[in-house]
Amino acid sequence: MGEDHWAELHAPPSGKGSIVGWADVSDLLADMDKAGVERAILLGWYWENQKTCDRQNRWHVDWVREHPDRFIGFAAVQPMAEDRAFESVRRAIDQGLSGIGEMLPPAQGFSHTNSTWLQILEWAQEEKLPITIHVTEAVGHDYPGKVETPLAEYQWLAQQFPDLNILLAHWGGGLPFYELNAVCRSDFKNFFYDTAASPLLYDKKVFRVVSDMVGADKVLFGSDYPLRLFPKVDKKPGFERFLEQIDNAGLTEVEKEKILGGNARKLFGLV
Image (cartoon, rainbow, N blue to C red):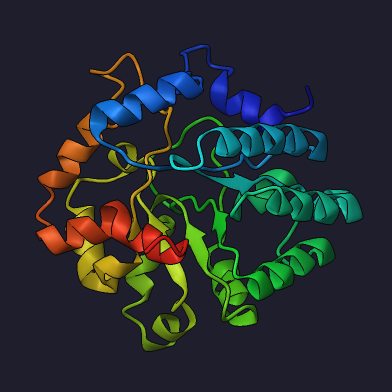
């Protein structure tokens, strides 16, 4: 299929098996209903081939059209495809998707200075489309497919596109800490940090700590579904155990409301 990075993550060469669960749309909706999740954001993958991006975008367009009150879809794109990439992502947005990503330039083989990527970002800023970018923590445990993401590049990106809403996955790989620096706090004003895969990465205290550092207004609930966030006890993906952890993470009710939907509703104009 030509998607070696995806294969490394989902079928590790070690043969130990993957913590990635599998689910179709009906499974996702059932798990959402079971956990009381009103709406889900469908993120694209950082595919290595534009053809694969196009396939996933078609799925997302169809699912959003079938369940407009349950799903918000993001478009996948491979900037290395140049004009074809830009045309594809514009078409996906025209067909009903609401953002771009998740992106991971090192895994996709391009840099943030790639001319097509810069064109996409400029257009997204004009159209007020949020961008989601994968960020890997610089330290911590290793795992198959882990790709280092130099944090300084994200600051450069924020400086080049000061009005672009940038959603950084996995708590931004530690970037919230740098918002305690006045220069970074100014540069990162339109950064949001999602909580995807949090139980696999951090103690639940991360919710309280990051909310204190940057404010709960900048934290977005994300799960990385259908990833199994508690693989030792859960054989299937779901939302309930993670939501229970957040409920016991020392947040106020106001903070939980923001993180679990309020911030996303503002970001996507659903208020």
